[in-house]
Length: 505
Image (cartoon, rainbow, N blue to C red):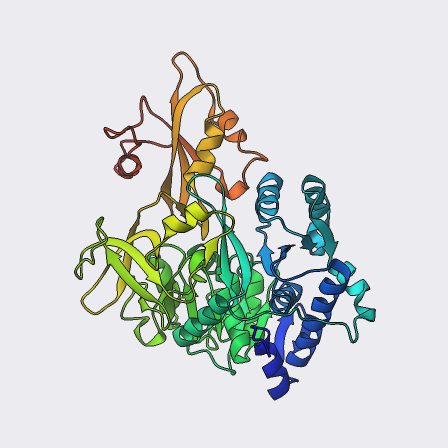
């Protein structure tokens, strides 16, 4: 019999059929019921939409049980689930659907209208919603709900991450990668069947989907889903449902702390809070540490599942600032520019290796070769390892701006700025922000005799890029600093911003 990750659900449905697998807005789904929904959905996709091994199924919607059902149905069929970021603009989403050649776009009720607009733009992609699938479930008894030749080497997830060239790239994660990511997470959190996970981050990111949610279903725990992050709803769930673990990014930790109910909410059920996605300030971690709740930092990327480095509860308080050690099934190296391992305490590029790492970038062999070299994934992040083996990330080789856990690549914004006639040149850098960690800032050089007000300049991003990517300020300079090869020295711009030489408007 072939193996796939849906066996997790099958096994728990055998051992503990009435155990609650998923809670969502008053609905409780047992493992037995979850398996039935998965098998039914897989049968519908195969019979009504002819979904075969390797086909791409996109999902556009907020967190819901249907997304998890679709995830495991894809595993049974050998299809790839493509979760779309609902915060992106229609052109951005259309590019991803076209690039992936998605067969179907499944939408929740809140995104059906957008889905139909996208289907007109991408005619090869059929649109359906939860109701469409439910409408044909009555005749699925006895229908085949699996495709042949499915095993752990079969691709399962196709998750797009912004590229430094301005176009997003699709990271392909196999079922094996999802499995070993789950095993890494189990070791990181000491996850077991008694855990109750509260998922509040969007599952279109691997952080929301794979740091705790799918690993919890691997061990047979319970997952409570929230449609989207709302501080009041999170605190209410902690008070009433008593979850044991949740994942938060710095921006959401700050938002919770700023809510008037935070100080009076009993956090006694929380065994740990996991955070990461960027360099996390001690003041952010102390928000929970001051309440005696361990904060576990982890490091990972879309391309690594994402769980790759982490702390554990026993060193959460003593190693604040570190992203921890290499995961149970992931090795790391820190190398200099000649790919030589550097000694402890010296910074270099972080390389990762393990079965949780992507197999390729979709349809982009050049990017795959650049990222995967001699069996190692090049993260582009700079860090160092101390003498005890703990890793600290202290810089980014790439110029990504991480704002509220979202990756913003300057090349995307600079492409928009290039279209503005009044500008000679422009660069986008990150500026520290107390709420979001960083926000993008546009540094511009105007044509002689030309002017443009900031509101008009920033309006050029409307409808082109998602709102969270828009520059939050503008800096005017006479020229951009460059090296002898003509490359803009963004580190100099960041330093000038930090020391007050550049003043944002």
